[in-house]
View 1 (tube, helix red, strand yellow):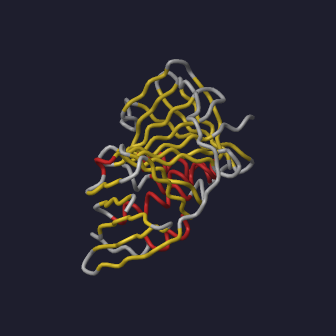
View 2: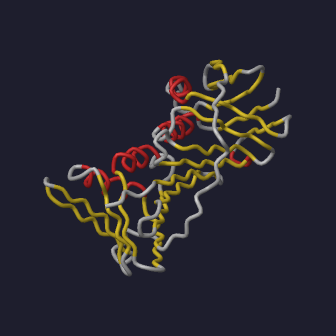
Length: 249
């Protein structure tokens, strides 16, 4: 069997796949001796997702080949993961062109999906230097984006010396959410240079409303009119990161 890995919490995997699904419908996981990776662009090329799960994250990780490609449709996989019960473990096995998914709790249920051929070039990470870095509770960011979405379809991120602002404006009105170290809404904050950049709220809200369940904390980074980076740390050493292209005003 080329690849076999087990994760202690099937529901965490469901949240992870739902988070990926906000940007992409299908993609290749690449497994090697170090762990599992996935990097893909959404069809409109506005958002990129970058996932890394080191082998230490898994309770079991066995690979017999140098590199194994796992092409999956997230909708099909998610239907299986929705059947997971609390405290179920999950075991993935790749063999004979199929992905076998076992949900193990009081009963053991094994599903099988055909691997799909997802065509796409291997993508480099965007080469961006960030002038503003802020770490905050992911729930706090989620609430601010929900507020902004009531007003507009675009959020403007403003990184000032002492505080971070998320601003939304339209005919419906205006919202300004402020975050700072002083108020306790930011856990870390660094500004090399004051910056302002706008992003699609549809993408932002979609991403954060799913990914906040994976990680309590989010690190956001941006520069004026450059992509936004959102990083969610996964327990055990994994990292889920999104890049979102700016909206030019």
